[in-house]
Image 1 (tube, rainbow, N blue to C red):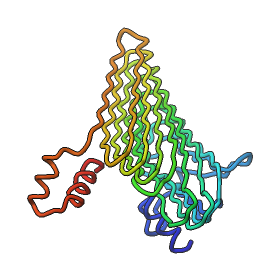
Image 2 (cartoon, one colour):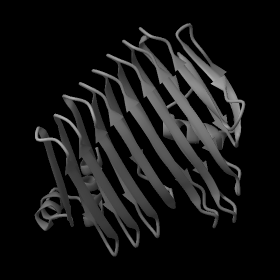
Image 3 (spheres, rainbow, N blue to C red):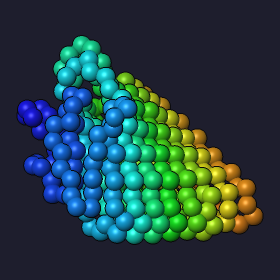
Length: 305
C-alpha cells in the first residue's frame, strides 16, 4: 500500500500496522491483506463483491477489521459483507471507508453490511468515513447496515463522519428479538456544499427489547443534512431517539423523528433540537484568550466528542 492508502487506513480504522486478530483490507476494489483466526473466518463471496465473516459460538474478546480505502479517481464499487455471529460471543468489528480523490471524476463506495447475531452475544461495531484530496471529483459514500439482534443480545454501533465526504446516504435498519438491545451513536459534520442523509429504522419485535438512537451533528457553510428516525414498538419494549444539531453559516438541517406504538406496553420517546452556538459560550472562551474561530472549534469538538 502507498502512503496515501496508509493514511486513509489510519483515519478510518486507527491502524498504523496490520492489526492482531482477523482482518480484511480492501484497496481500490481489491482485497490486499487478509488474516483469520481459529474462531473467526473470512470467506470471499462467489456470486458478488464482498465477504462473509463467520464468528463461531463462544468467541470472546476478539476483533475483526474490514476497512476499505480508495485512492483511484473515478472508481465506483458496490460491496456486500455479511456477518454471522454465533451464540455467546463478545466481539468488536471495525469497518469504515476512506476516499482520496485528486482527480476530476467522482469516486464512490457503496456497501451493504448485514449482521445476523445469535443469542446472548455482545457486538460492538465501529464505522468511520473520511475523505481527502483536492480534485474536482466528488467523494461519495452510501453505507447500508442491516441488523438482526437475537435473544438477549446487545449491539453497539458507533458511526463517525467528520471530514471530506461530499455526499452520503446512510441507512440503518434493525430488528430485535426478545430481550435484545441496540445503542447507536452517530457523529456527523458537513461543510462546503456537502450533503448527508441519515435514516434509522428499528423494529422492536421482542418482549423486553430496547433501542437508543443518538445523533450529534454540525452543519457548516452551505451544507445540508437530513435525519430520519423511525422506531416501531411491536411488543413490550422501550425506544428512544435523540437528534441534536448545531447549525452554522448558511447550512440547513432537517430532523424528522417518528415513533409508532403497536402494543400497550411500548414506551417510546423522541427528541430533536437544532440551534446555533450560544453567544455566552463564545464569549466565555474568548475571555480566556481564544479567537472567535478557535472558540467555535473548541465548542464543535466538544459537542462531537
